[in-house]
Structure formats: structure tokens, C-alpha cells
Length: 356
Image (cartoon, rainbow, N blue to C red):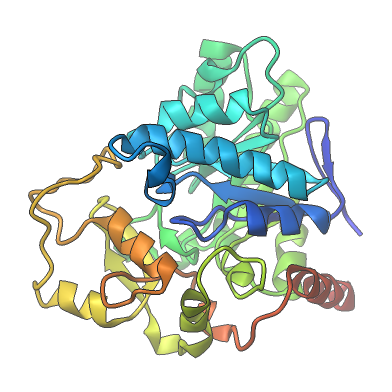
């Protein structure tokens, strides 16, 4: 089967587990995926809430200490490749990137905005690879040009996240069902764009497809379209090793196709989530925060926000759906049981082989 090479890192299987916050993909899930030969990813979002005890009055400091601890825990549990997902939209983006690099994490994945200054954080002895998450060929071109001109650096890989992903989406709401913005349509464009930089600078830049990929057949389709690997988030939520509460996992298993909905996030982007009583209250105008407790996201305006997103996602992580909701990909409703990471990856690989 195909391997995935990113710089001097080689994953035995071309599967990356997507970073899912708040608290859904931590060291437990990331290490389990890494041990199966894929790339495990810790989400840096909201760690200030999970690790509040480390710095009760300083959300940013608690998040950084928590991230360092999660990276170390993953390293203790896993022999494979460990990445961190750091969203550009986070107010403490720079601190979290610095912590990741200092801890020598293998890869930083960064989206929810263009990570135009990401290479500026590397030191001479840094080993961390940098992988932007994009939603178009244009975004890839802008990042490659900026990085090359300003830092003499090119991405070590690129993740193209399509409109069927879970959580925050890098598309306008009217683009989500438009075939011109489908992953199948965008992937060859991004592969073509990346190839210009590969040829010009003699550097291999693998393109990873993400967003709505759920089966081995989906993986084969993306590889056939030019992807070097795939990223899956939703599929790994219903595993025993996923760091979310059992109640969070059960929302996926109980969800029907009609329950997967597009919401307006306080962050200013559309998001995909599972319908619940909390979201009904938001639509009815019942939810309204009085103050911003964390200033965690640059684009969040408390005066217009119907709720605090990091608190809502933290509540969901703990299983409190009266005061929170679960982000999910478009195929979350297809989950019908909890399995191990090993069983999930074996099933994906067998489905893929059957289609070869």
C-alpha cells in the first residue's frame, strides 16, 4: 500500500487524523493513530480550558502548558508521527506555534485563516514541518509565494479541506453545495498549482485531501485525483481512543442525516455541527453572553455573538449538550458503533484494497 512522505518523515499509511477541538483529539487519539502508522494530530484549540488548573487566571498560559503536556504524553505513548493543529484565528496562535516547535512536534497543521508568517517561528535547529490547510488553489499560491519570498521556505505539504468537513469551513454558505467547490473539483486544481512550485524549486510538496472522506473507497478516489494522502476527522470520533466523552461519541452514533446542519459560528465562518437543544436555543435568541471570558479567537465579536464558542465546545466535549454542541463532518450520521483506532484503520485499508 501507498506510504506518505513529508520531508524526512514517512508514514506507513497515507492517513492523517484531523485535529479536532475542543478536546476531541488530544494525546490519546493522536498516539493511537500514530501507532497504527498514520499521523496523529493534537488540537491546540481550547486547551486553556482543559488545563485551567495549570494557570487558573491566565487562559493563554494554561493553554501553552497544556499543549506541551499533550505533546509529551503523545510521545510517551506513540512511536509514530505526531502533529499539532493550530488555527490562525486563535488569539494565542504565536505562543502555541512556539510551544509546538520548542517541543519538537513533527508537524504543525494550520488553517482557519492564511498562516502567512508561520515559517518566521522556526529556529536553526527546528525539526518541525509546516503544513498549511487551504480551501483553494489561490490560497496555496499566496502562501507559497509569501513563504518563499519572505522566508525562503515552502510548505512541507498542503492540506486541501473541502466543504464537507466538520467544524469551521473556509467557504461561503452558498458555496457548500456548489459542485464547483467540491473536493473532487478543487483537488486537481491544487495539485496543479503545487506542481509549479515543486518543479521551480525542486521540492516535493504532497497534497492531502480532507473534508467528508469516510471510507476506503473515498480514499482511493482522492488518491486517483492526485492526492498523496487523506485527512479524516469525523471517522475517528467514534473510536475508543478518541479523547471526547462517551456522550459526545454517542451524539454521532444517534445522529441521522437530517441532524447534520450548517450553523453561523461566532468566529464569522459557517460551521457544520449536529443538531441539539443548545442550537435550538441559539436560533430562538435565548443564548447571549454577557462578557468575553477568554478573548480566544481574533475574529469573535462578543457584542454580536449569541454564545461563547470555546465554552460551548468544551461543554460538548464533556457531554453537556444543554450548553454546547458537537462539530461534525457531513458523514457523521453514518457512524453506528464504537470501534478501536486499529479496527477503523484496518476497515479503511481493506475497503481501499477491495477497490484497487
